[in-house]
Image (tube, rainbow over all chains, first blue to last red; front, side, top):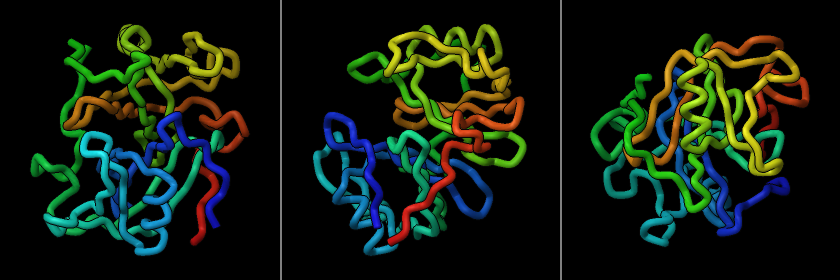
Length: 106
Length: 106
């Protein structure tokens, strides 16, 4: 059952995607109520694309899908943490395994 | 040097906070340009509180500060990942070590 979650003024909630095998953060994207339901129903991550204004199943064209193992929500009920098995070489469209491949130096 | 980042229409960027020791996601909060600078300057996480509309140093009253070890940003330059050493028992105001202590069941 989906708990009461706090969606933002656009109906979105950020979803952090974590590799369940090694704990790496793969990406962050946004879900709405329906894409969360799609994720729960299918067992694969689905998001709402803010730039394209449409639903997308992660890896639908590349095959690099994310198999959902656990979905957590935080104390404020306004952020999701999705633990997945990442299929294929990685999550990032750049070819990197994770979208967080650059660091900020002081 | 801080790279060009994409702040939202309120000047904020989500910052995922990860325990560098075990990879656990501790919390997510929002930074603006200045709180990111405060974080880089001091070596401890600083955020912008959307509810209180003010800057806050994490753990300022509780002592449960977060010592910053690395800050990464994603391919879209619109999300930060901050790897920290969490001081004290944990990050969550509920007393839990992490804010993500509840799961969603289908």
